[in-house]
Length: 340
Image 1 (cartoon, rainbow, N blue to C red):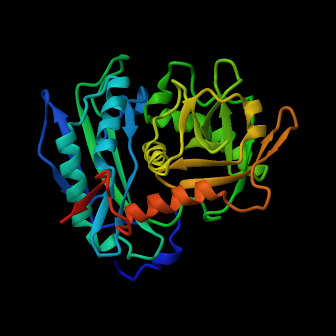
Image 2: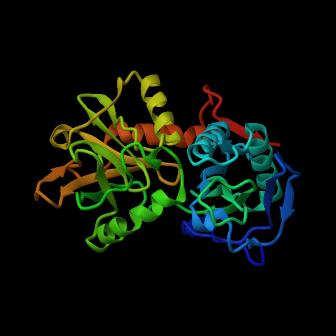
Image 3: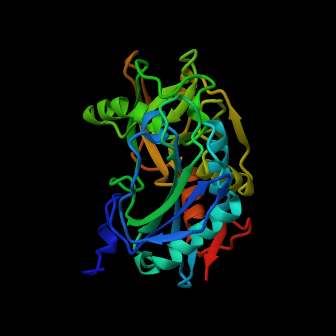
């Protein structure tokens, strides 16, 4: 680092680090891991990732704990999920062992960029796989490149852990039924950009999408999963078009640990009138509490936070998860990988 970073005021953006790691699949096998100081890649103009969307990625974080140790949260879950994404769009899956080795290597090599304990910042880890074969026919590539870059980041939501307003807009679909919503492909995020920008221009932090088939049930919340607390239960949408969130999965387990019943089911939009708490959840934000959900088509406003504060269950789950990531509480489920 040319100058000391202001760890407490990092944005959720890209800051150069010392290196990234790469590995290519050619001739039917994965090659050696390469360490690169370059922030660019040399791609053929006919690469399948550029023409046919063969691109998948993941997002996970490393934290410096209270004890000074570096912990990567739920590394193997991310490894398994990118395998499912690869299978979904006919790419070569990255073996769990290779994924794990490369994550450990890139974090260790960029150890000085892991923010200090107490700063609220973390080292964001972005694995991505792209098809690199030169071809113009619509078919899967024969060659792939897997890259992991890292960058120190601050909180995803500038507002911090306090409720924000979100909106429902039926004019937009993020994905199609039985489409690519189950996998972490770049196209899903491209499809959400117009709706997201419109929501931001109207003063909302995110779009709460309805199911793309019937427009009756809650689906995803912008780039995150959605959960709510109703009658003391943790409820979250069940849908084939939702990316299985590792954060949501973790929060559901913590809720069960706290004696809270968990239901993954269809949630009709009208049921929002009966919920006591709600939040968007994902790697970047962990949990972003919701104050109000405005249905822009019907004019109905669902007020979730009456006092403008996060609900007690959401707060407890957020604090518990963060404490596990930072080594402040026992990691009873074995979610953390410690980087030696």
